[in-house]
Length: 250
Image 1 (spheres, helix red, strand yellow):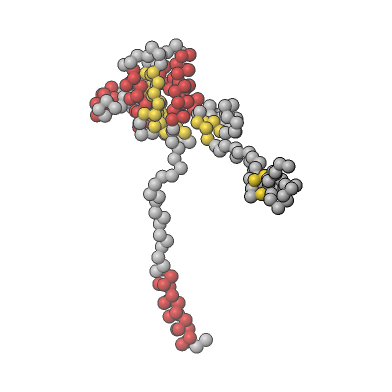
Image 2 (tube, helix red, strand yellow):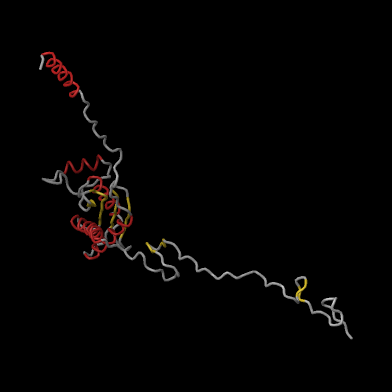
């Protein structure tokens, strides 16, 4: 190969090298602006927790106040058992809020290690009384996400926590087994003649289409030979056949 061609090939390769290195790196994918497909505790779930917690409290011989809040600490459902102390109403609510917003059970701080009384009192004062370190508040965790909190007041700290955990466990069991009090949807309503779905007492669905009735014909029968001007004629006179409907005495 002549030297001139070798030189041209070398120049071409050298010129193409920086072009390959100058390629722009791929753009990084921007993070999503919103979080979708979140698990959220609703009223039906909160009521299920309340029912199970009250049942556990009754089994322990306790009269408790039970509060259920969402992941932001907003109240979803509350129950005050007959005979429960009125002073424990706010305590139960604050326990639920603390468990939900701190994402952990309530109790002396730090959670692991020797309790620090000064730290606990400072936290309660800094929050304006909206956070407590009393036992009895338990977060509701579903699919690794805190979706709410349960607070109980009326027994000892350990008893309150036990009642709260019993309510949460009942909710988790219902979710795992796919059972709830709404599982009877699709049964026939006894008061109606149409099949519907009953969810919490509210009927949803569509009525059966009405049975078509036979259409009555409104077409009048055609006139016969004895009908004149829409009225039944008496007949043709035997003596005067040219005058219909007239009879003369003879």
